Image (cartoon, rainbow, N blue to C red):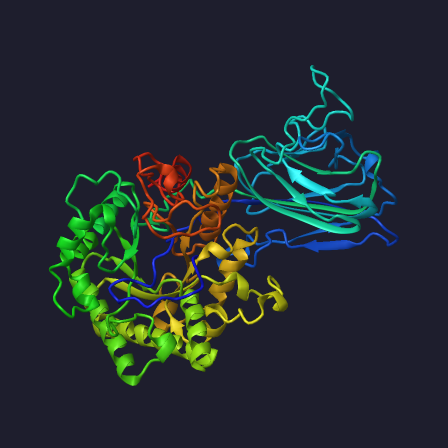
Amino acid sequence: LGSSHGANITSSEPPRMRRKMKQSKAWSSWVWHLVLLLHFGGSDVVGKKLDVHHNQLMTEALASAARESTFNAQRLLNWPTQNIARSKTTCDDSKWGYQQISLNDEHMVKQISTVNGADEIFEVTADGSLKVLAAGLLRVTARIKGSGEKLSKPLVIGSSAFNPGGLPPAGSKDEAGAFDKSGACKTSLDGMAEGNCNCQEGTTTVEKVIEAKEPGYILTAGTVPYPGAWWTIQEFELTVTHTALHTDSCHNVQVAATNWGGCYTAHFENTEDPFLLGGAKLLRSMGFKTLKTTLATKVQKPTKTQDEQAWSSLPKGYSIADLANHSVFREIFNLDFSHYVLVAYTRAVTWDSNYYRQYGVSEDNYKKEQKEMYELTKHLMLEYKGTRKTFVLQNWEGDNVLIGGYEKASLAGKTREFVQQGMIDWLSARQAGVNQAREELKDFSDVVVMHAVESNKVYWTMPGQVSDEARGSHSEWIPNVILPHVEVDLASYSAYDAQQKFDFGAALDHLNRSVRLTDYAKKSSYASYPAYIGEYAMAENQFHKNEERIGTRMRNVIEVCLERNCPFVLWWELFCNEENKGEGSHVQTCNYFKGNNTDLAGLWLYRPDGTKWDLMYDMLQSYLAKC
């Protein structure tokens, strides 16, 4: 994230550091679908086809899991809410009342479908709620259509929004004589998803991802009428997709984390290690087999002395291959990682690694870019021959670079197409250098080197997700104006624009569809799904330590990747590099860091005081437990 302005920097540092925020089990992770549908009106009984998995899956391997179910609708006349459920007062206002939509209603058509012979894990309880008999990830969609008195929230779904045993009778009171308000707060642990309408008639949809951590999770749907008010429900629809977590097999290559920057160190502060090396060792000790880091001369405040001393040995006018051959990176690359994702910028133009967005790529600079990428790839393939290691060389959040380029182009009287062509030529030169070295050494090395392009504006390019009017001139991003015109090996998604969205998987699929693969990549193990998640994170302090909100969204990001067998899903990051200025703020300095946990946003696995953030630490470790 960060500002929309690019910045000129030296090529020893990747583009502006702000907040740096394959084996999948072949669907031994079952997917269960429960779809319940009511249809009311003057028509005869009709059928309705629902996309129960919600996301368009891209590979034949997943096609069997992405099944749709067809259900018959039942015709029913007026169904006012006060006749179908009991009411409950809420935490906020005793004048409001919830009315449960009972799944046991005689007109409710229910169908349970399973994939690959999975057991049925849904049970409708006596009070009309839904009981989930196995732990896993729930993706819930509920829809209500109706009319009547004006209602602001005609639909709610959740678990602890209601009592576990269903709703109490209207007007019930606790022992103190007060209205029963337990479990209906917006702040309840499992959360309450609300469909806002504020209308007399219309359709409201609620979408929510829930992690059922234990068997027996209760899911309930309801409406929120005023006392005495009513809504005639014309249609009600609930779709629940249950997926078993991918924690029953080893994913220490796909699930990993980043060491890049930080205002502090933890657990290697008393060593002589430079920042990048110390963090890499700590991540390897945690069990990860993939490391994401920056191929740059990183100097961090807590290890300033070690860093400056280490990098002082680089020759004047060094190349990116010289940097990879430096003792710091030789030691990092000799650690027991099998995969490295490196944000790597050449020194073809030393005064601005993103020069191409403003000046284009001359023939001379194209050759320089290609030459440096060739030399880097050749060095990696020869130096680590016999290790079978994989190195992925990528840029960082290229759409931020486009933003800065568009602004500079406007001031200079140049077009957006000029900026885009500059990026296309630059990426082509980088890929050409990698291709050249791979072809030259294809019979002499078992090391794999791949080239990736990273986008951070994927969701905005998805058809139908953002209106053309809202998008305006801000629709020209890497997926739709760059990737169609250049061949690459992989595509990385810095996923902050969609990581909290219910349809995050659709965004990753959209990026995946946009990639034009090289011939080399088409023959690789990544050919079926070359898009990966280069960054995702929610900061502990900025999101108010809300573990339900953070946990379910981050779990969903990981599961979306593993369901598709995407190459990597890389957490940002080991140590936090952002100050705590509130949700949505990104201050990428350590100027006001005084050593307290609360000084920083919370993009970490280890806090400044050396303690682990158990939520994310344990979540990542759960995918390594079987390794």
